[in-house]
Length: 379
Image 1: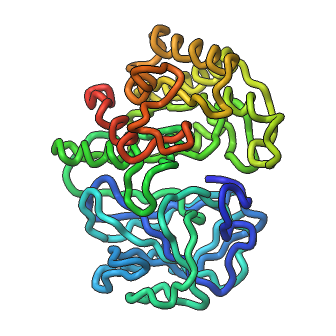
Image 2: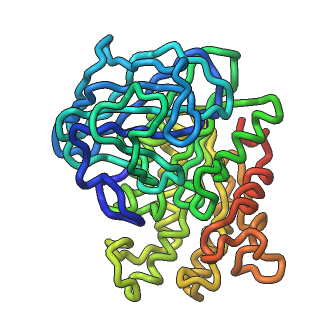
């Protein structure tokens, strides 16, 4: 989750909500018989009161399948409050899901919420309406849209068949899925979840990517550093057995573009060495080991000819990737650099996988990432 800001695109995080209903769409990766939602007010300036919240199966757009609608509670109450700086999980609610089902989470806030803890780049359309429309089935009241998620930090699915422990994919915009098609669930975590389901081995796949996130640097727009958010976003997730770490490109790339960038997006501008990135990886590996998680490392992908790619940054990337491949400190390694890199130019993405900005992948590229993973490496 991220601090309220105007990062990347217009959104509702700074203004928050008052006498409004927000309907958010997401896809589950594992099936079960009951659910709970997790909400975050970590970056809120005051208590957050949710007047009421519901879950339902998706129909088209903001519409839901009315027969599936269920009211969510906390300690048996439909109205609940989350303190500033805190997170909260709802009660378990009977609600049947299958792997890859889409559901909507709808909440109504009667009183002003203040600025909203959010996830800036959801790559999914979410909806807002004036007044209380948490029970609405047709969705016509939801006239405003946003491509961010608000307060919603997780959906836990329980019950159903016994399945392996979940996998957290931890990273930046390449894990988040920037460059993939809007509302199409074509991020690499989505493709991995589909692959597991097709193989008859469905399991929870958690996308914990934040666009622009750095291993070593806290940012108002780009999230707390990976080292500092690892405890909340990985170790704090229930039922997790494995984490895949794909990070580092923003540490070394933003070091190159800082002086040229006229925008506040990348602030603070800090030059980061390959050694500092590796030290951050070692910190996260130790955190995972202490929690008895399996840790998989992924190599840093090429970015030429974007502004991220210079002689200095490429030397750092080479040093980081050499360490990931040869140090033996991870339980397994996924060599995404070689999977999506150009066969003719080691400093560029394969043109078949390039979204067009030379930094992010298209749908085919994210599918190639998921297809390259040896499923046995996930434990």
